[in-house]
Amino acid sequence: MKMKCTFILTCLLLFGSSLLLAQTALVGQINDAEGQPLYGANIELFKHNILITGTASEDGGHIELSGLDPGTYDIQVSYLGHQTESVRGFKMYAGKQNWLYAELIPEAVNMDEVIVSANGPFYASGCTYRCGSIIRNQKDAEPEVDAPISLPDIQYFPNPATEVVTVELTQPLKTLQVYTASGQIVEQYHNLPPSPFRLRVDQWPTGTYLLRCIDKDNQLTLPLIVE
View 1 (cartoon, rainbow, N blue to C red):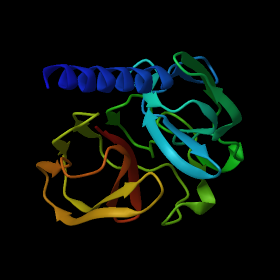
View 2: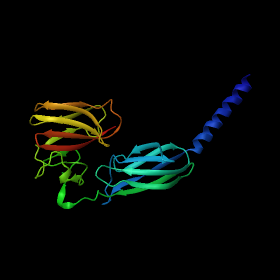
View 3: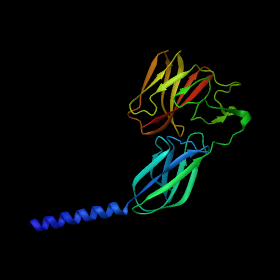
View 4: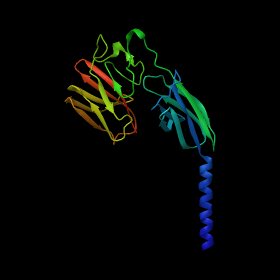
């Protein structure tokens, strides 16, 4: 009986080892057109137009995704305010770290009709912000305005966040909306007083979100990453 149990255990160990050896990993680097790392870029892997898995780039633009089956994948890399990069027929070999490098360029828009973002990942001042890039045509703004947005400075932290995000409001805010990166509204708050507003995110799926602050005819859009 003891020999039989030992034999079964050995077979299970060998089977598990063979599965591990048959798996593979994807590693790589995601930068912008200037060679600067992009944090929070979305990487999605498809087979036959079906989403298999995905991840987001870490600090420094590095990506690592393990436990993948070998084979051929289509890969899509996207980041707010940048053109999506698609890689078709990417071969993943067993027992290896397969390397992916992508550079994303800003979306092409008419320079005469744009709102350009402020600089800095957690701080915005006086204009619409989305990851340091040109984000939309002026004519598509809602509501339509003739000048850059002039909301007071807004700070929010931490970013990335796991549990609670604090939004520092220096004056009353008419509306605060939260959107997913695809444009679906998640939460909405009205008539906020000039004080720290705490937003719980611990129940949200991980990913990139947009905080839209609206005050009369002005609005300010801020990126938020939830881990």
